[in-house]
Image (tube, rainbow, N blue to C red; front, side, top):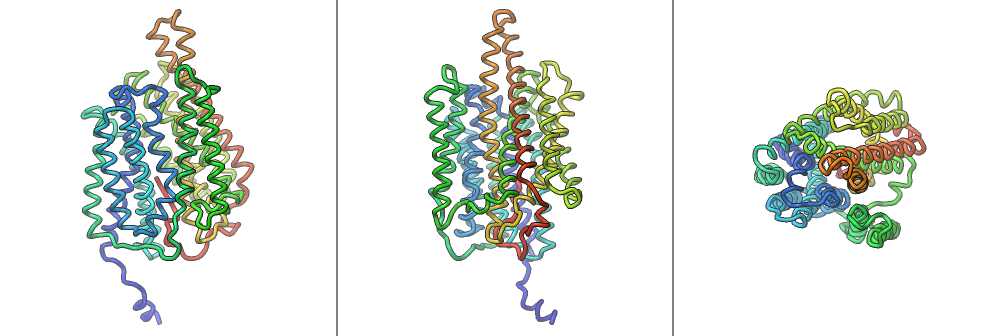
Length: 500
C-alpha cells in the first residue's frame, strides 16, 4: 500500500530548494527597501528640498499602497498566475526604484515610492504562494517558511547597514538603484526555476474595495500632513476636508465589503473578538513603532551629527533583541497564552517610549537610547509572535490567506497613519518651541532644542498609542487559539503567513 501511495504522489521538484533561494531573494529585496530608504531620508530630503511636513511621504507613499493593495495583490497572483505575477512584480519594482533614484523633485520621489508599494503588494504574496505550492511536504514547507522568517529578520538588519553605507559612500539614490540589480538577478533566475500555478474557480476582483480603502487611507494621511503645514492646523478647512473625506471613503469601503459577492476583506474575518483585537492592536503597534525609526534617523544624523553608516549600526541592538525575543516567546506561548504575553509586551514597549520622552541633545546612547530600544524590541516580540496565532483564531480554511495577510496589511497601514500623525505632532511642537525661544536662545540653538522637544512630544504620543494597544488586547483577546478551533486541515493554496 505504501508503494502505491508513493507512486500516486506527485514527484517533488528536484530544484525546489534553488527556487526557494530565488523567492527568498525577492522577499529580501522587499524587506531591505524599507530599512535602506529610512537611513537615506535626511539626505533625500535635503537634496530635493522636501519640507518637514511632507518628508513622511517618503515612507507612507510606500506603506499605504503596499498595505492597501496587499489583499488584492494576493488574489491577482492566485488567479493570473503566481510565477507570471512574480516576474511582473520584479520588473515593476525595479522600474519604480529606477524612477525614485532619478527623482528630481519630491512629487517624482513620492510617486515612485507609491509605485514600489503597489508592485511590492503583488510581488510579496506571489512569492509566498509559490513557496506554499512548491513545498507540498509539511516538514519541508515549515522549513521554507522558517527560512523566510529568518530572511525577514536578518534582512532588516542588513538594510540598516547597507543603507548607511550606500548613502555615505555613494548617494541616497543608490538606496533605490540597488533594487534594480537585485530584481534583475531574481528575474533571470526565476524564469527556469519557478513553475507556474494558479487557483481556479471564482476569479472576480473587488476593485472598488481596493480603491476605496487605499483612497480613504491616503486622504486621512494627507489630512494629518496638511495640519503640519504653516498657516494650516487641525481646524483648517482643507485639513478637515481630507480627514472627513477619508473617513467617509473608509465607511463606504465597509459598506461595499458587506454587499459584494467577492469582498477583498470578508467582514466575518474581522468581527471575531480575537481576530478583530489582533488587527486593531497591529494597527496601533504599527502606528506607535514606525515613527520611532523615522525620528531616531533624524536625531542621530541631524541632532548628533552621526554618519548614515553609524546610524544604521546603532539600530542593530533593536533588531537583535527582536529576533532573540521572538525565539524565546514561541515556546512560552502555549504555557502563558497570548493575552498576557501581548498585554505585557505592548506595555513594555510603551515603557521604552516613555523613557525616550526624556531625550536630550546630549543623551548617552549606551545608558539611555540603547536600553530603550531593547525594551521596545522585547515588547514588540512579545506582541507579534502571539498575534500571528490570534489573527487566525477560528478562521475557516478559505479565509486563512486573507486573515494572515491582514496582519501585515494592518502593520503597514498603522505605520502609514502613525508616521503621518506623529510627524505632524513633531513639526507643530518644534515650530511652536522655536517661535517661543528664538529671541532668548538664538536661531541655531532654538532650532536644535526645538527638534529635541518635537521628538519628545512624538515619543509621548507613540507611547500612548501602545498603551491603547494594550487596552485593546486585554479587552478583546480571550483564549488561546489552540482551544478555540484554530485553522485545521490541509493548508490552502494561499500563503498562511506573510512576513515583511
